[in-house]
Image (cartoon, rainbow, N blue to C red):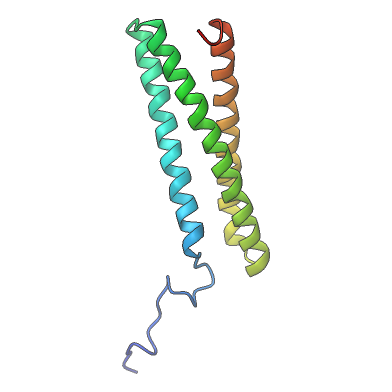
Length: 127
C-alpha cells in the first residue's frame, strides 16, 4: 500500500496522543531558559567568590539569583499544574515524567532561594 498524506503517520501531529498544546511547550521552554539563567548566575557568583570579586558585585549577583530563582519556582509550578491537567484530561502516564521534572526544578529553586536569602541576611541585608 502506497502512503500518501491522508494515510501517513505523523508522530507529532495533534492526533498523536502525547502531543502537547503550544502553551505547554512555551511553558517548558520558559522554565528551561530561566533555569539556564539561574545556573549562569550561580556560576558567576562562584567564579567571583573564587577570584575575590568585590562584595557589592557579589551581593548584586545574589539578589539577581534570588529574583530569578523565584521566577523559576513560579513558572515551574505553572508548568507542573499544566502537566497535571494534561495527565488527567488525556489520561496518559507520559506526562508523569514532566511532573517529576517540574518537582525537581521546584526543589532546586527553593534550595537556591533559601541559600540566596541566607547569604543576603548574613552579609547585612540591604546596604
